[in-house]
Image (cartoon, rainbow, N blue to C red):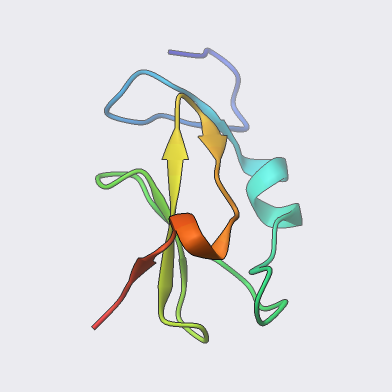
Length: 69
């Protein structure tokens, strides 16, 4: 876990840098993403996709994303 004030703690002990999250956009819609710390995913409401975060690294590939209902 990081002691940095700009890091978001996660259940898997990987800190996600808030500035990095603010800079990332959905590769499909170029819209904003929201962070689901519990599931370790970045959510694109516009594309109805959830991009996984693995070992602290966002996987921003459509084929790796989970379809949202």
